[in-house]
Image (cartoon, rainbow, N blue to C red; front, side, top):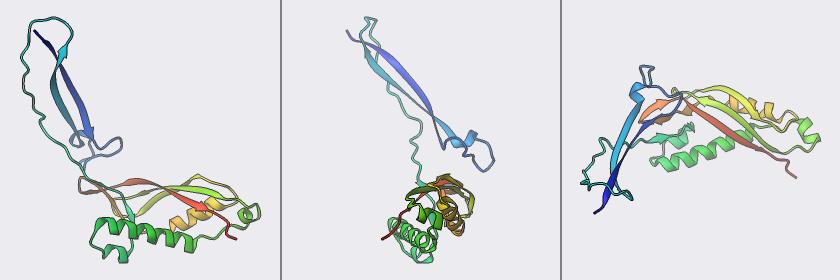
Length: 176
């Protein structure tokens, strides 16, 4: 005779802290998902029949990260091609406009500068700031160039545009 015990698990599935629905309240963007399962128990109790259980809803969300806007890239049909093209265009823009600061050049400073910003649901760059700097004016120069990158394709969650926090690492390296 086998004994069973039941595990009942509920957890919240949602967009995470800081994401709200259009009404501004989190109630509609967090959904409980519950399931119950019969497990074998080492304890000797009277036999309990396994009851079938159902998951009320299968939740599948699609997320899309923001990407740098380029009319050339947006004309492409495939999403992966658009993403690769946008990354290439963004890097091209960065390195065409980035000027190595003289102080950093004189001190042979190299490394990675990270600029943090938000891409709004309207596709605009907002709140840019330096979160990692190598010094010598390199962070300020990277920030200047990032602030020139005004137009983006916004990120989306559940097929709706959302504000997305973005960290952009920029490698600063002296060339021979």
